[in-house]
Length: 473
Ligand SMILES: [Zn+2]
Image (cartoon, rainbow, N blue to C red):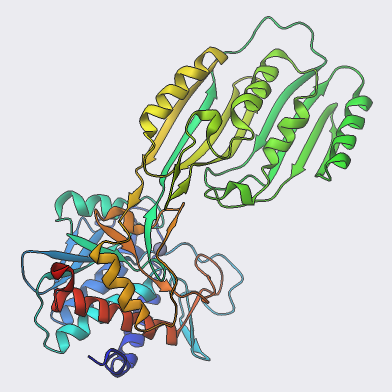
């Protein structure tokens, strides 16, 4: 089949339908009547359903949060999972984020790369097969979510009432293919016990604050101290500390309080070693001071359990997997107040083979004597499809038939939309040399890449849903 030729015949329609979708401001908003995540996401869902119905597909909506467009018949169900919600546009755009423009072969608009462009590419792959009068061997569904950028209420609602596809892919990441994702957890380690019988300490730690999100390495940290004696010595040791390790930091005396601040380096929570945790640096300095009892317990605990723990060994949860790599731990938030004690916000990611629930239970027991407990645990299991699975093989082949690239399928520490499918992988639509502009100003996608992705999806669906190649294997 001439995949390239077919897609080029539909080029103008594809771009026109994509522009219609890009014009919808589908940022999550206030819940309204029949619009649980706002009118914008709902309008984008309605738009896709109406395109499908125009093109002879069967449409269905679930709770105005998700929906699908279906073609073909048969016992098996193949799924493609995309989303039509977008993150807020932010500022600094050269043109209106919801006024798509095509300039020099590049489309610029919020969502063109994540995930409206790729979703429309997959949609056209389905549409072209139907328009060519192909006979589907399985039911083929484009599942459309409207809350991927926030809470995934869309897929939660959808799979509560709808059938789980036997296999599928999500065009919401990168080529060639992501076949494994780590388990993702967040939890808080909270200081419960406060020591009341305090001898006169020299320094009272009033406040420490660092980081705002579990999934980012904190790039700033601040502490407020009440120094009862020898303020100048404390300042001197802080300056020595900064100089010795070439650290970016400052101090200030404000109303009798000493304020210290540190600047580190931010990084994504899945790669904590790529950043410099500003909170850890500040804790290291505080560890050398004569602090009040409660602050000492907090700082000592950080030293024994929290810092130098990027592999989870201090939690008893270090683990390694050939394909999925190692456990990683990011301490994304560190907060302390004199009144409430301390809290560490942890983002732990782990490969297959670790029993996280057991690990966290044992950690809780181990830290209890130190006066700390664990709360607010969230947990997503690792997601893994074997590299030799027929799904991976057919998709990878389809990709390689269009792109001169022998890269192997890979795994990541982050999570993609594919993990909501029981047997699903992330497949496109960023190519090896694509500039990743997702969630950024002037988000863009080359028309050539849009068409190339459509060709790849067309071949993949042709082989899986028309020729039944996955069943033969
Ligand atoms: Zn996305």
